[in-house]
Each structure stands twice: as structure tokens, then as C-alpha cells.
Length: 101
Image 1 (tube, helix red, strand yellow):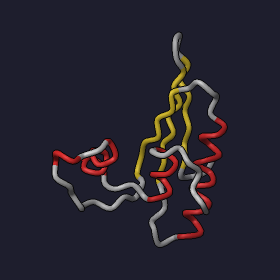
Image 2 (cartoon, helix red, strand yellow; image 1 turned 135 degrees about the vertical axis):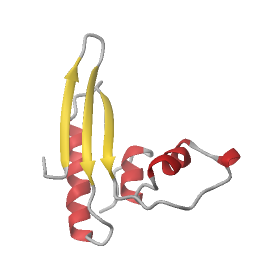
Image 3 (cartoon, one colour; image 1 turned 120 degrees about the vertical axis):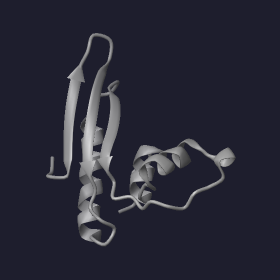
Image 4 (cartoon, helix red, strand yellow; image 1 turned 90 degrees about the vertical axis):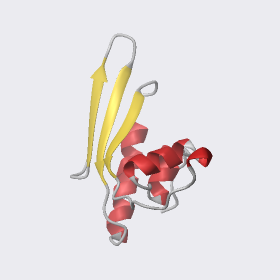
């Protein structure tokens, strides 16, 4: 783990839930970003298969840039609620891809 990532697993009767709390570095700390996203990917990869995974926390997102409400996607709704995701975090969470670091 790291001082920026905390993973907690809750075992329930029908489903197990893993919550990963993150505090992403700012976009100006590039080396720290690379280390953070490698550790986040590793944390996700170590989560037992079949668990429901929730990644929550501060992604150091930028707030602003709004679209017309009729053209919103799931990612747009997230952006309006919580701020825009960094490109790397979006690849991991929304696209299911490991970012190129």
C-alpha cells in the first residue's frame, strides 16, 4: 500500500466488497503520479476476483467544463458531481485499461 491508497474488504454472505480509498497526487507531480497509478493498478489487480470494487476519494480533479444536460454520459454525470477525472484514472475506472506510464 501507500500513504495515498487504502483498501478495505468487507465479507458478506452473498457478495464481498472491496473499497479502495485514494488521494491522487496533483498533476504537477509527474513522478509521484506514475508511482501512484502503478500502486493503484497493483491494488486493483490484487483484489480477489468476484469482489465488487469501489474506488473513492480525491482524484485531484479539475472542476468546470459542462455539457448540455441532454448529452450527458455516465462519465459526464460523474464529472458534474465530483470533477473531471485525470486521464489515467479514467482509463483504470471507466475504460478498464491500464494507463501507459
